[in-house]
Image (cartoon, rainbow over the protein chains, first blue to last red):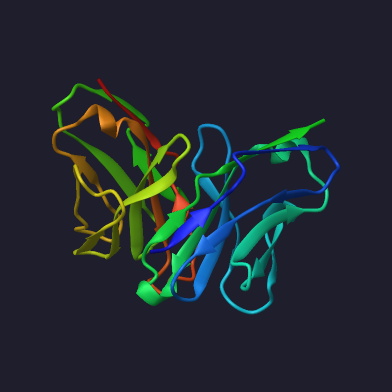
Length: 115
Length: 114
């Protein structure tokens, strides 16, 4: 069965410093990988995705993520954090071998960026 | 362009009552789904649909029914609400069934079952 792990409940970083939010996955086929962000009392918003090709993908608001097949990881990164990046971040995986109709989410990581 | 619209935003039910959460999208998306969000558990898939007349179960389907009579609408029905169904519910859609597309989410419906 497919699964997603976000090992950190919370990440704290100072404004201007680089940030990393970790994600590892388990699927039986080739994965489609996604990152979403949720602001308070809002729905989730898409940040970026990996489908195929270059392992480094760039997305919205200056975020990027690196797909590492050998480590089954898809960590979210940003070179310089902003206070406005503070939110709840979700990693998600779609298993293509089982038809890819189910997107499974991790438990989420809360990011706090301190001014 | 409204995107994905969910109603109601808030609802309080008593145990045993029934209700329907409405979801509509105006993007002509083939794929629609329902998730529930609970603290520390992320989002869990309840049901999904790959087109009008086609639905299937997700991770946590028990206690919920769905139907898809049109491309635009995908209502979620609770036939006999239980306190364990207290949660925030999100409807999400994506373009096509090629499965490379990202999900577009509604703003959520917060349900409390007493």
